[in-house]
Length: 376
Image 1: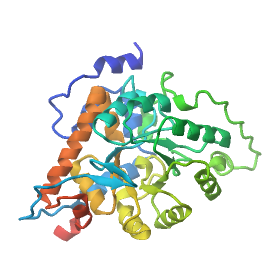
Image 2 (image 1 turned 60 degrees about the horizontal axis):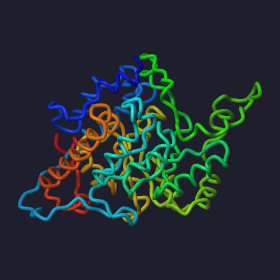
Image 3 (image 1 turned 120 degrees about the vertical axis):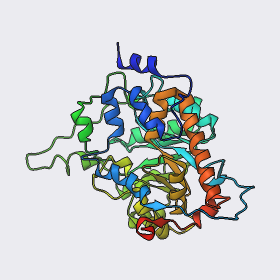
Image 4 (image 1 turned 90 degrees about the vertical axis):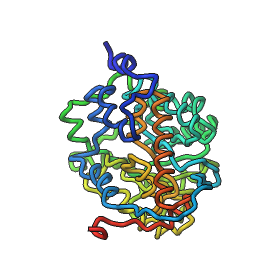
């Protein structure tokens, strides 16, 4: 029996009674995902220091309830870079989703369409961007990795434009992904059925030959890492708005803003790059201050509840991305599970807003969170 068959036979077409909150999908997913696959999906890089920091950062901040606030006309609606959305919950680009469900991104796209969420489809998706576009809603974005050959990058752009994607999200922080010790110990190996479908038709890049005194890192894998010249070139190659993902330093944020970025995604790649990097939430306020109050900022990193969404918006985000949690929900109940996860997060956010006396997302942005040392 193949890994795909095991997953298919165990995925449900109903929401299990054990799901009482959005985070429950994380625990329940272990019943539905192959253990080695789960180790890869749930792990970060190295010793998972940054992965853990993302969650700890949320726990260190508290929301103070407010009284006598009229929230009877409350709404989570927003306009993001000119696009009206009913809620601030977007689906982050997550690669190789057939690790969690045999239909992978096709099911995730159906859920995004049903809940009017923006799905950001990954370059490394298990399904082609064209097939995903047929299932996703009208507000669909495409995440791009720059390819060693510019002609391939250009072709991916043209394919995304032709398929009706409305924005490009260029990931900048993942030129090197240090393996997770958790995945290494589990002896994870990408199964044969799980491939980067968008890249299968392209000729492989020429092999780089290193001399004996060249570094496998500096002159090897970093040879094709994005540079400012690449960014300036890319922005001239598409009519679509371009966002940049993987920003943690305020100076980098200001540079990308000055180059013409539509917006930025504050992210440490879910703790999958530099192990020991700060939590995304920790860096969010400084980046908001650096780019100004009206510049579009998305947040990615560790969200598991509506209260977490509230905290990210209070610290400067306009909207947030859900990463691993979409895979966990996908593994349990396919499109239904992802849709239920989004709806549950939305309702948890509304409940948090109501108790905090916030009728709108703008009210959240005006809220000051308490730190653990403020209330000890």
